[in-house]
Image 1 (spheres, rainbow, N blue to C red):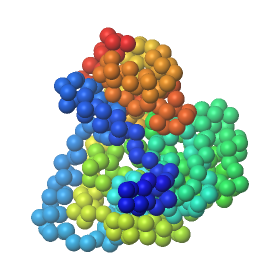
Image 2 (cartoon, rainbow, N blue to C red):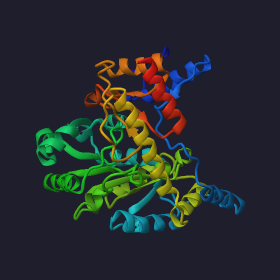
Image 3 (cartoon, helix red, strand yellow):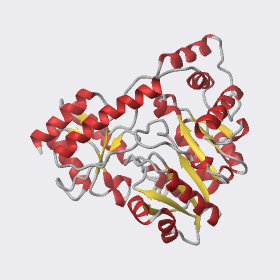
Length: 389
């Protein structure tokens, strides 16, 4: 446990909770830039486009109309109703407004979900490689992650893989599609296999659908839409990726009881809700017709295809991501150690990436490139890789 000179110690729940490796990488990039170095940044995880004007205008209008007082801690009634309508139509989740809570970004939804489900000593099944913070969210609950290699599940069948890795302490499954970092989009049959396993074993599913609107091949399917799954699924969404609203810190979670009570308590006693003007802006995101999401998808597809062609040409073989905005190439040609490979890419080619091992042991031998950047950056980064590696 961390102690100070005065002898104070952090609560033990933080013993296994770390800080993001990605933040450390970003700090290194900032250091290099402060020294005058040019760095081609592929390590980020946010949209490159600005927030649409109609959303910003809605915020300005809310401020002008003095809509700045406390909102209900679960969210504005108008916004929760609009979200429920969207869930029914687009996600085929039979949700009502009382099944929706507005939260400060997808992270707060996930935090509340794990706090509501996981007890000390519980196991959580996670398909791997996985988004790094999940390990720490489980650790904060004093639970334990149990990794299910995604490659194994797709090769041997999801039911067989889950049976192989489940324990008598398994309480929940974390299920992310499209996935970060690999861009895998799970198919309807795969999702139904996971749902059947959860139903058979009486497990809870914590579904992370942050990239639901960024799918190139196949179709996004919410696991909570499968028969019998709404009651045992907490689904976490965010406006960050769909509407380029990362800094706005707004998302929402969908659940039935008793999970909604847990989410409400976790929100009430952490932030007591979300900024009121921000919620009015979010309402505009859901109720204003716009081509933004479709245009986004087309722009990301163009960037994906450009990056993958260049990486494969450079010998960094990469499977085509079906969703999200990340490529996860094999970099063993550079080094079997993904941290070393990322260092070499940064030092020799000035290309900033994230080591695959950050996303769990099944990410080793890979690095993550984000193609949520300009066409010019992608071309320049690929040219630097060709010239310097």
